[in-house]
Image (cartoon, rainbow, N blue to C red; front, top):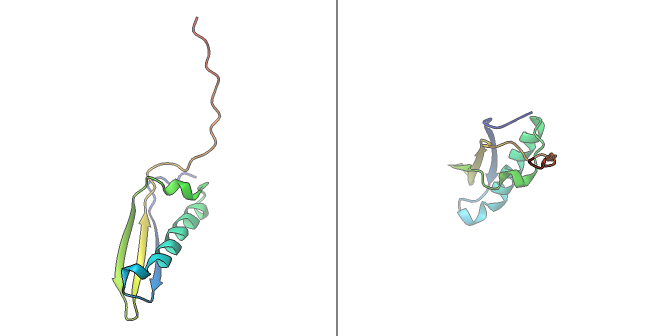
Length: 90
């Protein structure tokens, strides 16, 4: 299944309002994006996120913030490609 153009969104909570403390929540949310892509049938590897735009939304909560990461894949997950041998001209 090709997930190109399909939007994935994951939200995690951080119990701090200080950006330097949000790393774990961001990392967990990003990993969940990959899980969602796999559940949608994509042959996802984390390298598929390289060069892709990830969107961050931060919403204040009573005890900290909610970190929402969104990703809309722009290209298919890389798959093994079998190249055909080049035929000599002539």
